[in-house]
Image (cartoon, rainbow, N blue to C red; front, side, top):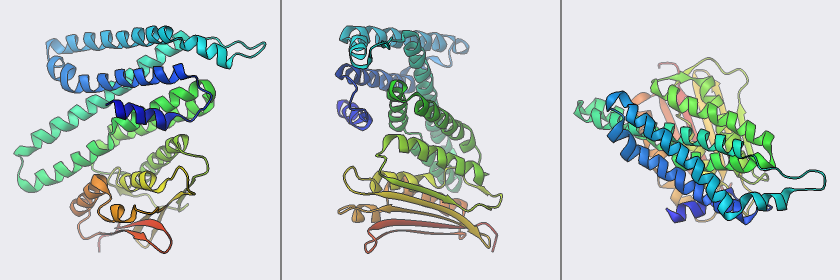
Amino acid sequence: MIALFALLIMQLAKADDMPREFWMKQIAENALFAGLYFANMHVFYPKLANRFWGLPYLLVLILVIYFLVIANLWFAEFIGVDAAFIKRFSTPGHPYRPNHHFTATWIVVLSIMILALSYVSVVAKRLQKNQLAFEISEKERVGAELAFLKSQINPHFFFNILHTIYALMDTNPDSAKSSIYSLSHMMRYVLYETKNEQTSLQKEIEFIEDYITLMKVRINRDVQIIFDTQPDLPVLLIAPMLFLPFIENAFKHGISAVNPSYVYIELSEKDGRLTFEVRNSLFSGLAKQLDDGNGIGISNTRRRLDLIYPGRYELIAEPDDFAKEFVVKLTLYTDEH
């Protein structure tokens, strides 16, 4: 757990001028939020949610959030965050003024979002457990869908994004507001659209755009990110979050902190064939790793494709050693043939 938070801070440390006290506070907040996430999953919700119409559960959550706010403000005062910010960011005629009310509000918002994420994870696990009684073919379909959904609801990704936004509030408020807007769209899509077997292609595109927008906040500006969509794409229904595992792996394996890197995504349709292609820079030592299945996310996606589009898709995922890039090309036959 300590290594996780240390890695998180390294990922978030984009602003060199932030005082040391700020990052100390970030580590403490990550510990508290991670504890809230897992406590709600394993203790609060299972033990209290179904008692007396959930009133004890609601009261406990309110008290826990109140404690998080108080603990955050107390720890910030204890280590001298306000004094450090005043010293670092005050200029003649423009003194820095700490906004404790905003900080408390932001902690409440973060806590509610994390509780919502943990609730979704609990529900996904319970659904997965209930489906074990179904016949084998239906159980495989539901199990693959739930495993895929669970793999996308990654609390670490949301922790990273939320605290990246938090760090931007003082240095780049406009970017922080835009990131909150994109994140809210992503969460709405994950919570509601994935309940259905199909969603519109346009909503899937908007979800990808929001994901790319948030990733751009966290990566070097020199990384080239291109998302090219055909302007006259037809109105189609597809399985939700079908493309995200390929995009996640492109960002995970195709971005280097020291070498020029890129992620190119293209979506087009012609003659009843919807083609999705991802190309990302490939670095020495990763070709074999990527060629061996691209992780659980892509393995689940292959299974989903077999179940939802049997005989109606083609998937190529392989390294191009000559071009030094990894290529994923998925073709869906949208017309029965």
